[in-house]
Image (cartoon, rainbow, N blue to C red; front, side, top):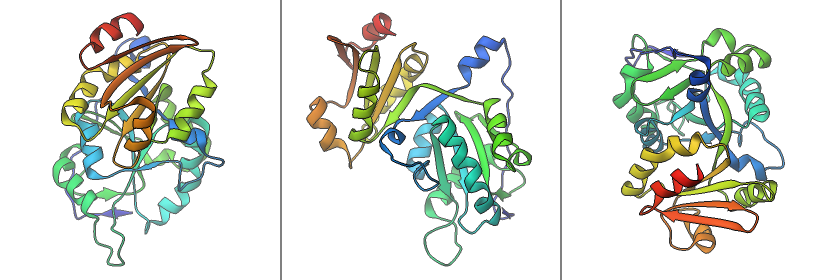
Length: 269
C-alpha cells in the first residue's frame, strides 16, 4: 500500500570491505522471548514497537530489522506467512510498526506519525509510505530497504534477508520464562547475561556504548530489557540492578555493574 502523504528521501548505504568485516556488520539480535512459546505465529513472532523504542534503537547505532506494515494493506496480508516463516526459521528479532491507529478512521497512528516527523528523510522516498516494507537499520544514517520484489516467496525473502543480516549469539529477553529456557539450553556452556533498564537514560547510554562488545562475543549472550511490566519479576532474580553483566559457566560465575564493566568486557568478551 502506498500513501503519497508523507515525504521521504531514503539514504541507502552499501556495506563494503572484506567478507569477514561484512559478516560482523551483519549481526543482529535474536528474539529470545520466542524460546518459551509453544507455537510461533504472525501475532507473536515480532515485537510491536512504539516510537519511543524505535527512536532509542536508531540512536543506539544498533543494527536491527524493522517491519513497517498496515492492517488495511492487502499486500501485507499476503506477506504474513512469508515474514512469519522467516522468523520461525531464524529467530531474528523483528520490530514491527503499524502505520494506522486502532480506530476505524484510517488515520496514521501517533507512534508512526512521530516516527515519520523525525525520520522521514532516512526512510522514505518522494513523500510515499509503502507497506509492507522491511528495513535493515543502523543508526540515523543507514536505513536499507529490502526490495519489495523479493517478498513473494518464503525462500526468496529468506535469501534476500541473508544478504543483509544474520541473527546469532545475542538474544534479547523481556520474559522471565524465556530467560529461564535460555539458561536451561546453556547449562553446560559458557554464556553472558546483560541486564539493561530501558527507562534509565544513564543505563541506556552505557548500553549504547558497550552493546557492540557484547554482540561480537564468542559466547551466547542473553540481553534482558527491563521495563515496567517485567522489572518486579527480574528484581527477584537479580536484585535492584539497572545495569548488570554476568558470566556463567557451571559453578564459575563472575559479575559486573556499571562501575567495572570495562574490566569485565576485557576479561570475558
